[in-house]
Image 1 (cartoon, rainbow, N blue to C red):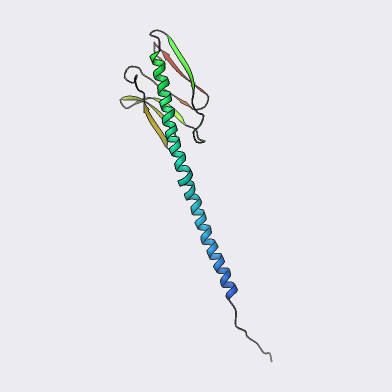
Image 2 (cartoon, helix red, strand yellow):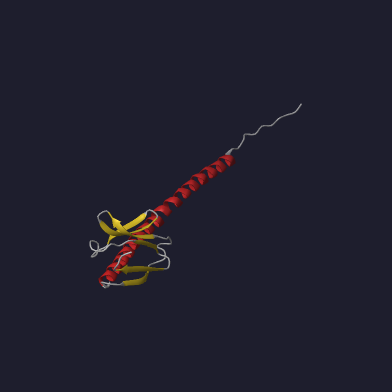
Length: 148
């Protein structure tokens, strides 16, 4: 005949382990959510704002160069100028498009979902302007009195 001695089972060790696993899991989920939130709020938002204002500056610079060239353009002949704009803004490339936008001429600078539209002041009604470029390398503005 066997005698069986039963002792009360102590579940305190298992309870502490489960508490540790549950709290660690919840904190891990919160940390992952915070990583995505911090990236969107503290990094992407300010970078997009910086890109927009840089695009406005680039558009104004291109507009000024176009107007300056057309002011000194000869009545008969051609003239061209080279200029440089930043290769990228906030680590991303962009595209510059010059042409008609509705009833006026404008410069559209865009990269991804961010864009800025700058009117070409001074020559919009008298001279037609068209073309496009990117930030890479040298850019050229050409004027020919005969047209292109």
